[in-house]
Length: 427
Image 1 (tube, one colour):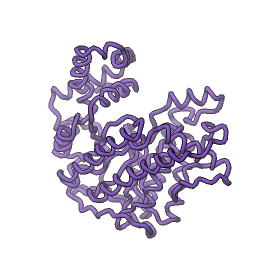
Image 2: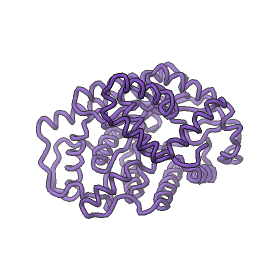
Image 3: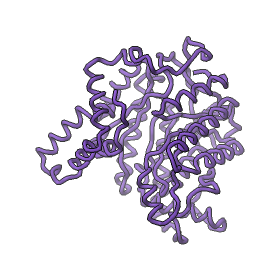
């Protein structure tokens, strides 16, 4: 396989292709080398007054004793036994090409150039991309193709997460269209084995225009600065800031939301409400995607308010909010939110990632002459991810936490597996 990482521009190119037709991506879980046995899932339900959480680790069990388990990735014959040689060669080639800056630059130039306005050129480019890079990184252009990929993963001993690939919405009409696609994605999980799909991924920017998310974030930031600020539309929530959280995006007191903005905010929350209700019916928890710091406070607000309203039976969380470990305030915000949730008796899950907006975050901070919200070096990001993972695993061990560790970093995976074993957590 390629030794270099995939260039970020390749991912942006795939997003442009993705936006031309609805698609669903599938992401296998971090640890599960063998095919899991079926696990009975407790049904989820809305709970207006949640009781104190007693959530335990809920993961697939195998015949292998957890104390004997090690995260071994060196046995490539076993890891790739279900993948054909031609597909391995194709995948290795795609990853190798993706690691070159010139290839990434060329792809970005093609996808954004005027040549794409030519029907023939566009058809050729999209066809070539679909059968190369797109087919490697994405599960399929529609639910039917994605479902076949889910089946193949399951036959190989892997579960999946369904991630409907959507870019930002621009108005209520596009938000409503995106809502219907999210509902179709959730409903599609009812037709497969309950263990084949573990989560459905939701982007708040697809059901609420980013311009409104920015306005909400500005007001939340100013409320953090001035506790006397009254936000009449604000629902019961968990903390979205810590003392070290960056507030420089909002330099002056923002005007209150207009009637139209409040109405649009209510519509956005109604969309999330429908998604939550359908997820409860399908018994599939939701992973909420993170975005850049300009609008992340509003996304946290949506996530936590939904987590308070919708909790699972037996304290299983419905909502998993995403924590980006490359942010300097990540651990502090995580701990504050988790403690507040425990105090309120709200089961909430967390998905832990490193982050994807490094360049834009640093550039924006530099333009204002303030310090970047991103850790100064990669090792500090690694340390933060591992610290957050350790904290969340300890919360799971004491019966009040749920976590998804999303990482491509082998060392972080090994550390998390070792920590889970030392805490007595079963797979």
